[in-house]
Image 1 (cartoon, one colour):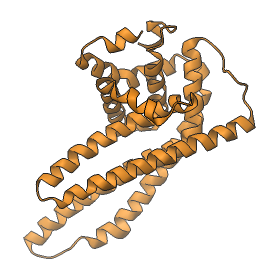
Image 2: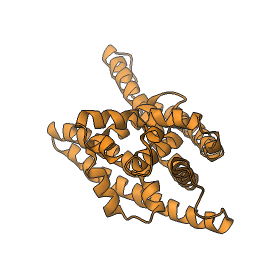
Image 3: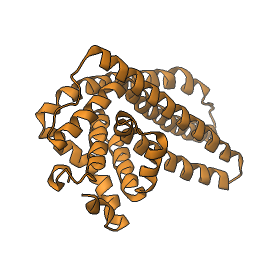
Length: 262
């Protein structure tokens, strides 16, 4: 299986990664036994998204709109329209990232189970350990702890990159490029993390895995980013991305046939 992903050219690997989330959606539809592990994350996503949209709408109306200058002259009207447009986009971006971060954090324990069950389906085996509340609580502590660490790293890195805006002209361009690359890396880190965490593989191993598959993981992250921007589909994006990342990882296992993951 490794040859399917690693021996082809970078463009093909990028394409395989990009379409992995979409293939994962088809995989989920045809695997009813995985439905129970999607329902709770889906409900969480709907509730978190509804709450973030509500808070974002109130923040825009109660705070942002009041800060936009007004005047009777045409240039005040033009400035007001420009700032209003920028405020709408900024609020939308804040809602988008708040939904992604909070949704992933709350749903992390269930996503970990979904990743485990997906791998079990691919291998044609059952779970290694029977379910128990004690094991679930342990997994919750582990996955939430991992999520908080990744979130802290992302915020710290984004804060450092933000300082580039202090550099005239070139700083803004560098910030836009690096923040996009950081976001793509974080998406790959986030969704492959459930496999590595469950197998007790450290960050160094995961980082090496991602960097040795730049085209494949870059395509995967772009595919996830596209799903997150499509209305309604973002509700399903997190579980689909978890399944897609698990399938990409398992695709390199020689014990799993190509038809199970392609």
